[in-house]
Each structure stands twice: as structure tokens, then as C-alpha cells.
Image 1 (tube, one colour):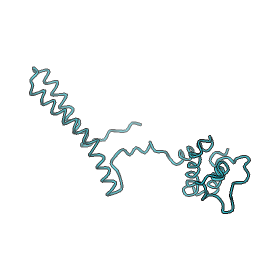
Image 2 (cartoon, helix red, strand yellow):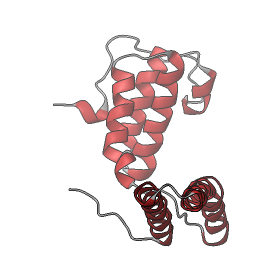
Image 3 (tube, helix red, strand yellow):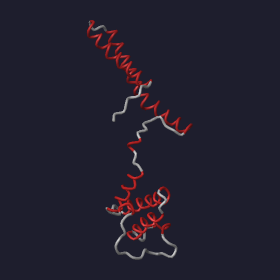
Image 4 (cartoon, rainbow, N blue to C red):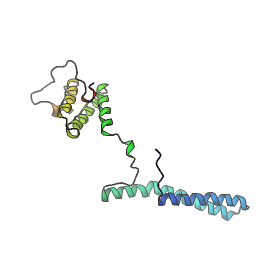
Length: 169
């Protein structure tokens, strides 16, 4: 599904100056190469370039910042299809844990996954299982200290790992 281009003031101004630049150049070459027509085309082209530059580098970022500051929303690109959905994020984090990425990635993925299972999915059992898996892998990780039981110095049962909560068949 293609997105329809929005008609905005900025697009109209760009179209106007772009068309004027091209039209004046064609007219200048067709009429007899009058220097005034070339100068007018140069002025339109310069204004066209300046408008694009000012819009993309100053007006849009400033408008986004002001809108974000005043009302909490932005004017910039809001393409939500580029963002991961919750289920995609869960699959991504579980993939990190399953394939054994680096220690840092495993621990951060497990912490985020535990928070998602506990707070969003309201599944404390799945959150507990995720933390048990990563605690078995890295029993001495200081980042996981808050997830250890008070009497637990290292995680027992270093045998087989349980499957991740979302990957059971």
C-alpha cells in the first residue's frame, strides 16, 4: 500500500520555485539567452535551495522541538511501521538469549525481557524463568544481583537449561 503524499505549504513552495527555475531556464534558452532571464532563474534556484535547506535543517527541527516541549508531540516523521512491535521485540530478545550472544547482550536482553513479561504481559512465571536461565549462565554477574534470592550466592542446578517462555512447542 503506497502512502499518498501530503499537500503542505513547504511542498507547494518547493514546487513553485522549482518550476519557476526550470521554466525561466527553458524560456531563457528559447528566447535568445537574455542575461536577465538567467539571473531570474538563478534567483529562483537560490531561493529554492535556501528554502529546502532552511526547512530541513532549521524550521522542521525547531518546530519538532517546540511541539515536543509545549504539547508533547512532534511534527517529524512518525512512520510507526519502522518501530518494533512488542511481539517482535520479545522474539528479538529471546533470539539473543537462545543463540548466546555476548555476556553483556545476554544480560541486557534478559533484564528487558523480564521487565516485559512481568509488567506488560503480567506473566511473573515467564519472567522468573528468563532470569533463572541467565543466572545459570552468569552466576557472578553484578547486574543480576537484584534478581537473586537473598540466600542465593550462586545459582544451583547448572544442568540443562529450560526453554525460553515464548519458544515452547
